[in-house]
Image (cartoon, rainbow, N blue to C red; front, side, top):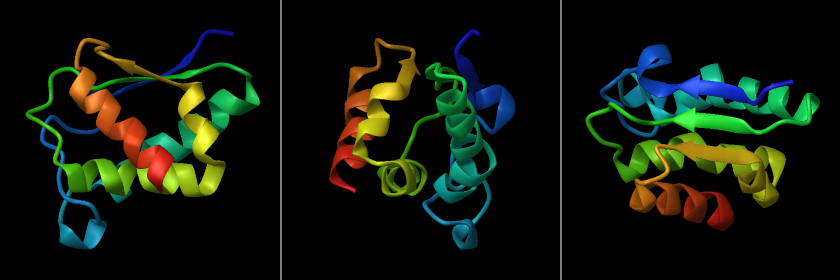
Length: 105
């Protein structure tokens, strides 16, 4: 089976919001609940990786990243970062920030 994928802009938004749903649309919490957690579970079940393509959005505030990825770590453990592939891979600052939030959650 191929890797499970999330195309952030096509499936969620090009303008990510805040950390929590109560703070407005397209929050990190909403992304986690609607796309990230279910697809991560599917990837683990099928023994494949989860690819997340962040290309095309207007930027990612740290609160969005925290709202989306801290729960992933808390639910599935810090080693979940090993099952994730981030695209575009040339945005090293964003990728390292996400990995740091997962490891520190």
